[in-house]
Image (cartoon, rainbow, N blue to C red; front, top):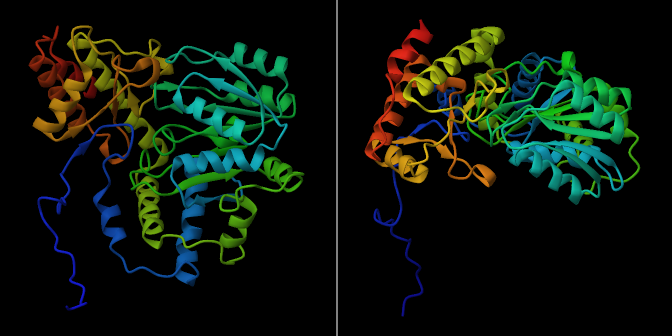
Length: 399
């Protein structure tokens, strides 16, 4: 009997050869700029190649501009946004560290869990999902608890809430605390202003406002945070996420891990596109399209979950699901009939909101009109009739 092994046969019915062409309007990966796709087709170089470090230095320089910081320690982690979150927390939270968390959504809860696993003593200031913290109540909480580390989410993806950070950072610094800010759904699409706001450690991702594929987590660390890091008593438990080891890779060019040249190419092109458009112009584009989307939603007769327009994200919208409508069926209709992907709510917002992203390359007037029309079509298929003309309202807002 022959012992020769046969190569497995690829069966089309078992494996999808060509992925579906979806229009992504969800809170996860969004539409990627064609130039970024082209950049990813460049030949791969090694992670210790001089050209790789040239690309890395370009990314560091342009990330400082997007973050709004002069921090020398600004680079990327070879991980997704959640890896950026864990990097920030595991480096600055030791066993016994007093941590204050502003908790009003899913990703605040994820930060809390990561801090708990690092042995933190946690105090949470909780609000219903969909509400922001006022300056006064933020300051009162910090001065009362006197934490060593304060954590908040600038753009809460689960609710659509934008959290102002100036009062949080000012109060935190008054009690000697460091501030960790989640900028996953704000970087590259909304003002972050790390230095001006007073954020000590900020992290993000590449697949949202920057218009790139997922896989890298930009992070920036202030000098005062770096000083605290270098004086920590307990060694880092997570070797891979140790910022001081990662710095020795980017600055000292010492082997740490095998970084993806392809993702670095993508990020450099994405950041170059941001620079060409202009940071402030890019913010204004997102603001304008978000307001046009909301005008259409309200004309249709739907309500936004975040009541105060000043507290709404420009990147991720959460219109409320009408009482007579099954949100899962709406999302299924959009996926099957229109090849459009949006997301539903989870946690206390499960079945109550749609989560619709307009960010990065996907934030266009054309996409605003497209998603409004498709959503109206899906709602009508469930027997729900709009109160007015969403397209006309959005077009008026777009000018």
